Length: 417
Image (cartoon, rainbow, N blue to C red):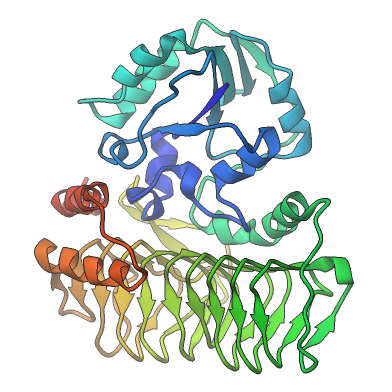
């Protein structure tokens, strides 16, 4: 069996800027990405691919060689035990639905070539309609229990505490934590609520798991005098810097750095917020960097719900949330002492700097700050991106380059209807 995660066009727009550079299945929420959550539950050995936007296919191709059956899963739906059982009980030719929401389809792999042809040379909305039309012959099975679905960027941090707990239970089950041998580190909470992978270094810090589990990934480092409150997860090769104040419901993705004061923040990976400054109720993509003493508001002074830019409607929409901070897409950066207003959305590969508060919506490939924004030329942006990934011992791939070039060429569509 081969799993194919599919994106719906509306949610692809709603979840931008993060889906500008990835399918929904590659969004991190909790410890794992959406795809990893499903594959861990269904079978860690299952291969998966994505039915997604055309310009992302080179990096995220649709391929299922050797598979006899295909399991399509809506990438925006969070897995849980009852839903997992319902999907594993599906028979060939069945579609699991909740009302109008298509959750999963189980079908023969004979259609794979035809399904793959639906992705190419057409707008994604048309490709998705062709896919659903092709699968419309399947027998509908209604799923009635409540489900959790990722439909807006702020849902990533809203669900993060619950997802850290669910992922923690999933990936630590029947496993033994490595020992923490530093005599100057103080632990609070139950022993089973702190899990340490091999190669972790913790020095003279406080790990408080009384309010939720703490997961420290392989070769992660917690530096001196850091205070961490669970639920918290840091993944492989990441650093919590000296004197950091890490409050609950925070995820630090792989090979990232975190410092200052943060609360309820999700960092996908390969990004640095290493200095002082506050960041709360925020989502940060990959390859981002924060200048020293950057601060981002997460609460309006009038205590009213925060409005956030929506890429689908091309306008600010009411999030319904009192606490909602920064949403920053991949490869974006900000200079020292940058101040972000409540609910600011930054696109891909933007370079934000200058005094005062920039606009609450900063399109991709913007250069500058308050009233002085210009276009960040693609050749310069790619040059910087290459330098950044080389610092991690990697190379900017041809597929990544083409994705950034596509976003650059279509950047006006982020604010013009």
